[in-house]
Image (cartoon, helix red, strand yellow):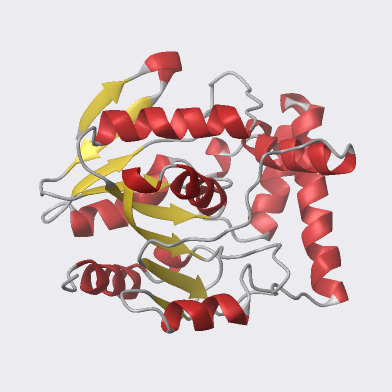
Length: 264
């Protein structure tokens, strides 16, 4: 594995060979190692690039990035990863949120998208029951509070809910600094600050893979229907929870490789 050290301590990890570059973006409460099994499966055919979101590695300074700062970070990553050719995004959780926002702002830098378990969450079409809304609101506000509490109280409280939610990341690597996206989002919503979030409207070819065993989905049925009705795109489910690539790695990897190798 080759590691490129960028500005502000950002580390880009590169493995594999091929004409196409896959840039992998994780979510909460993970880091670049979430994709270990994917890199092992793809590196013989694709150039795999991954990194940890700012502030997500244990020991890094706590950071609170807004949308513009995060988009600048992703643009810097894309420039380092593949300066002359568009990339394929492989994204999960908050990685989906930021990846969609980046692809809409810089469509020329992205050729196609593989998104995992988070689709048009929050859209008008994304309908949740009252119970699901209460569950989503409670855990997100909880994590926002954990960020505000800092390391001493925030770390054990964050690890507690991560365990309860079945997060696969090692407990020792989980910390309250990973919660800044929740704090940024909810502080902005509650204070009615403009956050710069664009409604999700993706024109790139996309494979959407989601777990079917969750209390609620982070996408609408309209999202699935649209992808399945679009040539070159599609939505597929697997028997898993939120971390599909960890719970069903073999089936997930086969699904991704088959889609990547389809003629365009």
